[in-house]
Length: 404
Image (cartoon, rainbow, N blue to C red; front, side, top):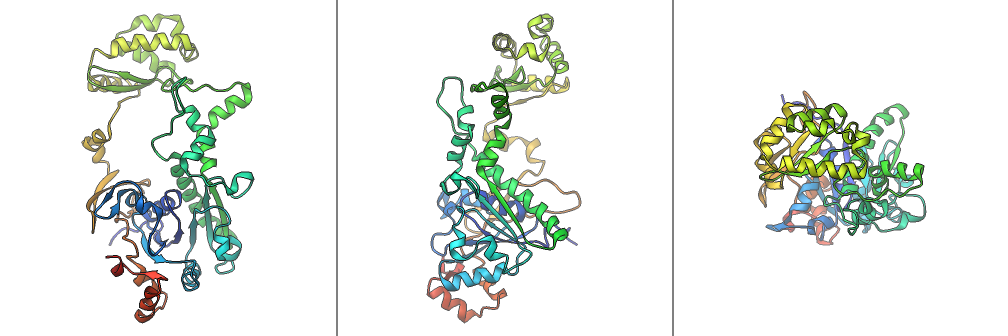
């Protein structure tokens, strides 16, 4: 008998686009939830047109929409909206990530939806939240990175603001929302009523820089960008080796002493400028220390240093390219990523999104093609084959056979 998935008794309707909403849905789907993704019948999710396209399918879309069912329906048309409302009556969770007020124009606000389903968990994700001056701002991840201070901090001193390569605020908002949905499922059983969740990219951007917001507020001094030189700890940065780069992350004074012994730098151990972490993080001391360590670390290979440091209990690791990540057999053996078969693209890598549950399974299926499950979903709602064809002919829905 196949082990149960943690959320295999949960059903989700996702009215989402781009990253945050779809990723939240994908997280829940990987843990076993049945996630029906609502998409426009002709263009689909915006993410279907992002990034690299292989055989007509977006790899970007694939990454954030695995394990879902695609329902291609125009919710701006009366009959399309009626389909969605029928589904709302049956599901446990609704996820949406449009600007606040967008769905209310269609009769799908939380207040309107909870009359259709008194136990619905309604999860809204937006750029700036549902309250305040910025609620109506259009904001993708890069805008929120800018307004949260992330881009300001993510640079070397004197350099221009730099966007983080990953859409961090989207990703954090998705995980925050997914965690909130799981908590709300528990809360609903206690309260026996609907629950509203409001998550935002801005909230997560501020959470990411919260340490420096606190510093700035307390000291009344602007925290200056520091690039790779993490101001709270030293040494805690990358170093060039004989054949590449490693990072060394000394988290306490015991690890510092171990580093000195492992590198044969007893002179640094005895130097009063580096006795404690508070001594080492002083800007002048830090710069001198980094230069001295660089002289030593450049003499051996990355593998030699990392092996030695790990044996001595010193946090360290190689700086990997993405190809290095995929080629590390020790990483691939962990089940964190694995090939999965997509009917159009062929073999595609699926990167695990969720934690491991001992004794339970999680799902790994490819992202759906546009409208791939429309017909089956409508049949389950009681629509006849003839009615489905009629809706398709009038552009209310699109079945998969019409997208090929």
